Length: 238
Image (cartoon, rainbow, N blue to C red; front, side, top):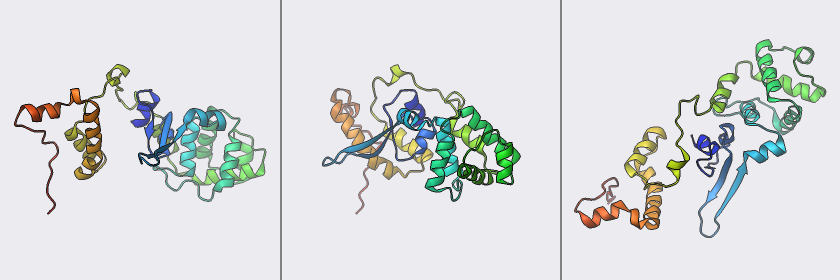
């Protein structure tokens, strides 16, 4: 969802250390985000630069995620190594995504048993023996991998997932974070404990209140009525 929001330019970026964000289509990723007043910093990665300098589209990144190991195929291709990765990237540098799809589908359908069979029958010419060896190693490792299903997971659009993306006009102004809704969402979707959610949420709410005193409904509630916002309950530990 974060990647979809970013891809549709509804947010500035995804703040995550998870490299899968680009596989899901994120345009900009902030990593190692630090709010330390003494050394505030963030590393910015952009898919446009990855595409321009490495010729890696979202499809190719998703395929590399499968070959190197991802959440849906953790083992990846054993023994590929840095040299194998370099040869792999070099071998697909000048072919189209469509040709790459055809090669992967052919490998899974034919399951070549020898390097010679791969070289003679594959819909792709392997000019270098080392590249041929790398692709044969890949072919022996992905025969049982649900490549198509994993690619569909990474590449499916919000429309295919039946997601309704908010319009840009709805995001021009932000409402005060709702503690109840945030706790309910994080506990049910992320399996976080309520106290962990509140530990991270309370500073955000406090900052929002300080920046938007004229919209601070909770302060008005405390000032004008004996009721209070009981979404957050403080329980003494002693």
